[in-house]
Structures are given as structure tokens and as C-alpha cells.
Length: 197
Image (cartoon, rainbow, N blue to C red; front, top):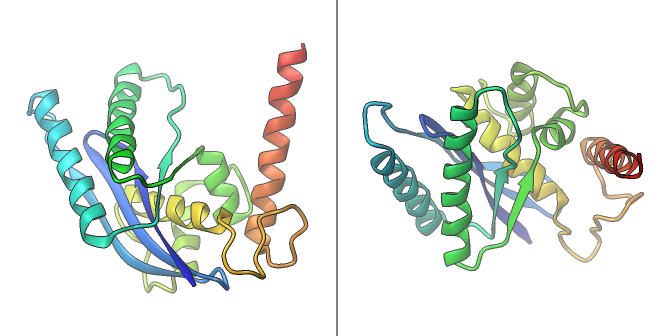
């Protein structure tokens, strides 16, 4: 048994898309990776239409079991956040139209899952993506590697096969999965503490 996941690193100028198949042994295999690009010279609605068409074409061609999208978070550049949020909405809509489950993951979650360290830089993430997928070189640009990292992170969280479990302490968890779980629990505790403060 295997699961196919489409990872989407949303962006208006460059939207990274990566698809992986992950077996019950948690071994990921590259299916597709690319970047959907749009020109800043185009009208916003035209740019969104190009990204939408690209995402929908990939979903229909490769038929993933689920979709993973980077969760939008606040940045200093409001314009960048708006473009990212708009593309995220397009990705969510494309998945919903096909009744595909969606996972939203923060950059910290993805970094922890792939590298074991939630504050890893882009090169470290790219290096680990290439290593995990047994690629000769890091996928470029970074948006492509980030999309694959999202897909792998999401796939590693899905229970696969009868001997697989996503519960804490599962013997089938990889070191990266255990690191991700620890990072997620730490984040949850910090959020709860802030709410009580």
C-alpha cells in the first residue's frame, strides 16, 4: 500500500508543486516536481488563473490521494502574504472540488519532519529532500524543494498499512517523524500557555 501526496508551496510568482508516493515502509519516491510561474506584469486575476490551471492539471494527471499546502503565516511584507494566501485558497478549492483531503503545515512542522530541526534553513531542507528521495541534486528553485518537503511531511503523518500508526511512541515512526511530533507538541504547549496568560 502506498499514498500519493501533492505538496504545494504557494506563491504568486513561483508556486512550487511536488508529488511523491510513500510506501508503507515510509519510503518516499519522486513522482513529479515543478514550479508554476506567473509574470508580475500580468493582472492579478490572470496570474491566479494560470496558477489554478497548473494545479488542477497536476491533480487530474497524477491523481494524488491528498494535498499538502503550506499554512500561511504573518510576514512583514503584506503584499507577499496576500499573494500567498490567494494561491493557498486556489489550492484548497481545487482539492475540495475533487473531494481530496488537505493538510496545512507550517514551515516549522515541515522543517522538523524533514531535517529533525524546526529552524533549518532552505539549503538544509533541500539537502534532506534530495537525500530522502535519493536524488543526485537538490531540486531547484527552492520552491520546488519546499513543495516536495511538504508532500513528504504530510505523507509521513498518514497511517499506512495495518502495522503503521501515527500515535505517539509508534515503533514505525522514523526519527524525523518523532522530531516533528516533538516540535508539534512543543508548539501546542506554547499556544496553550499564551492563551492562559
